[in-house]
Amino acid sequence: MVLGNDAAWLAQLRKGSVEHCVLALLRHGERYGFDLARTLAEDGGLIGSEGTIYPLLARLRRNGLVATTWRESVEGPPRRYYRLTEAGEAALSAFIQQWQLFRDAVDAILEEDSSP
Amino acid sequence: MKTREPADRLVDRYLSDLDHALRALPSSRRRQIVEEISDHIAQGRAASGIDDEASVRALLDRVGDLETIAEEAGAIPDRPRRSDAFVSWLLLLGGFLFVVGWFVGVFLLWSSDTWRLREKLLGTLVLPGGLLGVAALGVVPSSVSVCSGTSTSSPHCVSHGFSLPFPVGIGLLFVLLVAPMVTAVHLERMRGRP
Image 1 (cartoon, each protein chain N blue to C red):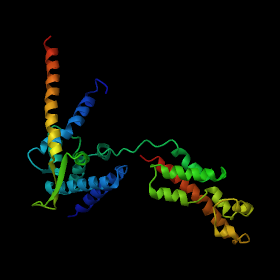
Image 2 (cartoon, rainbow over the protein chains, first blue to last red):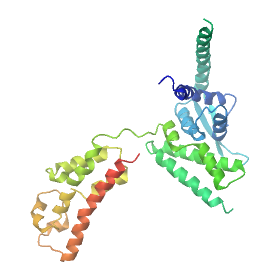
Image 3 (cartoon, chains in turn purple, green):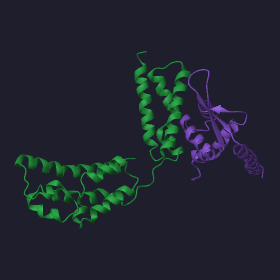
Image 4 (cartoon, rainbow over the protein chains, first blue to last red):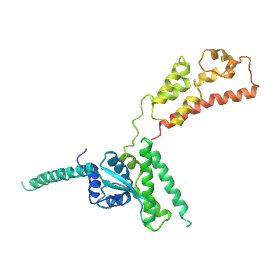
């Protein structure tokens, strides 16, 4: 990674956290792909484009962190709903813990730097 | 509903390009991603209310460009092997390297993932032995003797006394000479695709 390239570090940071953000979105219950894609693309642009959510969801599923169910929808054809598995919940709690440590560490350094 | 048709065609093209962009993936994974994105587009079209060409174009923009999706899917094809560069040459001319050259070409062709099944079949069957195979078919009278020295068998080859009317012979010779060359050029071009 080249320092000074504004986009590069942000892209790395997004890439490293987006999977766990998907897990976090499923914390309160199952959601379908379209809904997840719109939420992630709109809120702060965590994913580059809506389509990239599907390979990501497929990966989470292969790793056993999410599971899917087909469910009838009121409007239109049945949809594939995603929900957290136990492994997914465990991965999410670990992430939340690590994220707080990481965030505190960065904040501490930033604050130290601004008041020598 | 005059605007519906071009919009449908845009979606079809997008999905088939997506399928191609994901070709490095195992087919079940590829199919699942294409299916889900197809559903996503259908839901987006149903949700937007307007279903003209411009709104579908905007929707596909939001779904994203194919390279980004393929990259997220880990579908970036491996760096091609260095030996890929020799394959079409070996298939075409390898027969003259003590015949073994052609077999090496076939082995390299089938063991590489640069080419798809259809292209591998084409490279092997048009024509076995490459240009040596053409010579061995006995169409060129002066090389009839080569025939018995190769593993390539053909009805033309067995009957030594057999001869075709001149124009037919020339036509056949031309086709037989051109076919392996066209195949070699085709394999070279496919090697260069992204």
